[in-house]
Image (tube, rainbow, N blue to C red; front, side):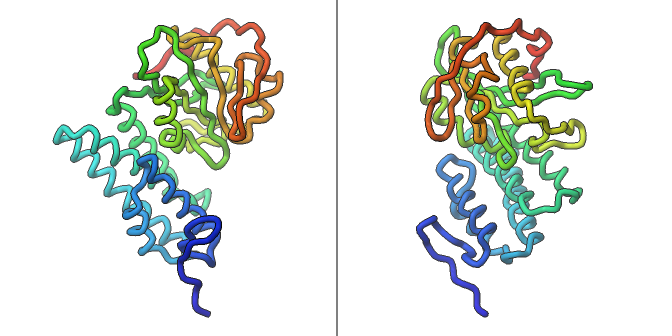
Length: 282
């Protein structure tokens, strides 16, 4: 039986109408182009190499495009082209993430993809203007929590910040391109983090999931309070599936941003900041 040809639907462009999962992820990659995390031409270049339902072809197609962008970023930096370099690394990070989507959880190649994605994100943060920071704070049992901090471009002594929290299907590296432009346009700092157990983790720091998510989120709020450049009355949380954080369980933020709007919360007195949480790599 012949396959249904690609076409537009009410939901958007269906590259492989007979394969919903592949089409949805391809549509998501096309949408990333408006934030600079893909290009339409590269998406269709990858699509030509993909056989619907063949997860190996999906991996090879997106990894190839990621490798090309990563190499272009290095070459552009060597020529002094910062904008070209950061643009290529942002796309490469997203493409590496996409290459992993349909891999078996035990596939050893996932480790390489995660490391490559995070390396490209690190290059992007280091060479962007203003640059970002990779932050690591102590957690439990000698492990650490890792986040990306991007300061507000506005010159203020104390700045508002949005803590953007990834979930099971959205890591902080994806938040890097979905949140930065709108935050900069509104003079907001950003802290991009993953919940323990849902991060794109490598072998060096695998964490177990926990249901009391206010504990790791509280560690991040302590870190922000200890920085000295954050307005403690203007710390907001953003993320999918964070309804429980807008209840009184998290009494340290004045508001929780959710996709359907802004909900006011309550504010109790902040805890004494954890001083070792201020240790951050630049």
